[in-house]
Image (cartoon, rainbow, N blue to C red):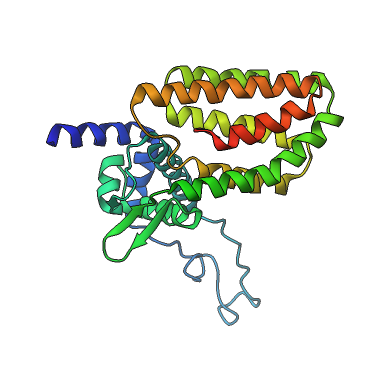
Length: 274
């Protein structure tokens, strides 16, 4: 059991770059505000009655770089947690505390807690008072509802794009479809999830509607928790079949076969990867 936990800790920590842990360590050090930040004069300034005959000029102080680094750490921890969710390192139904996860990632609890709060907004986890965060258990019904909503949004858009986008533009998306196939063949769930969203995002981006792309990506991400379940060999087979549909969809879009496009997209959303 202890060996299994140590292995999980190693896998989680490996997802976070070394510079993130270093930046978090700097964040933990107490910061002393500058005189200007405290609203004090610098040594060369005097007040209105200090002898210079005019009010001192205060020079605006830029925001400290430390806050930018902390936001960067939070973003990278968020990405690592998303990978852990999709990859199965964080199990549905289990409760995880920010301090414990922080130790596993080699960072403080603060960026982990902030990242988990974002995941709670996205529906991947739920807050458990005084304990931490419980990974959401997706029911078959919920995943089916997400697939239905995605189909309602994306199928009409893809059919419209199939009528208007030149074949050469669709061919430009082949590398994205191939990238998802490579990830699927390797059974890399987190890498496949990223490649899958990249492909669908690129397709929808041809509509020129950024709001559509954002909403669709949010729904897509929600449908990937959990991505697939079951034995490893079965998961890999599901991913390979799912990735093959990307290439089939591109071929249908190139020749403007609207019936095939509609069928493929609906079946794709109802499949394992989405």
